[in-house]
Image (cartoon, rainbow, N blue to C red; front, side, top):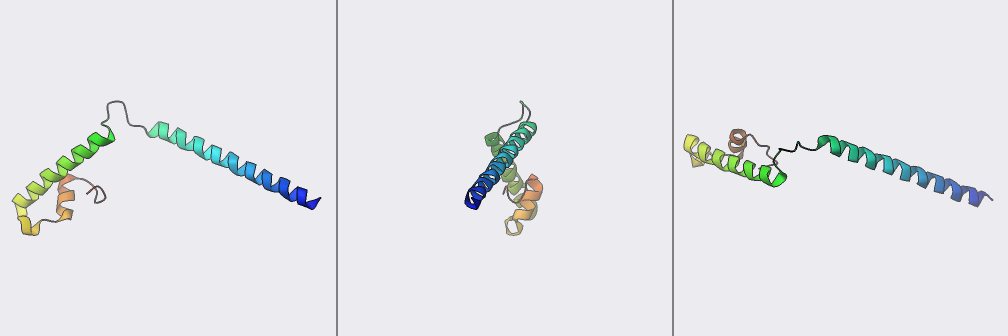
Length: 87
């Protein structure tokens, strides 16, 4: 008899985990719906293109300003206003 109780207890725990997972998935879907960009916002591909252009323009500006020898990633990302991760 105790074996059956353990099995039922384990199944109840599994069902509890399944309910928790379903609740987390629902929370994630709700959050994603709230975080979606507005309809006129550029898509990811367009944002990447914009950031690339900003970084290239910033690199040219920094080279003109301080010279190639003093060109650094920090100066480029500061001028382009992008994160180091984006660089």
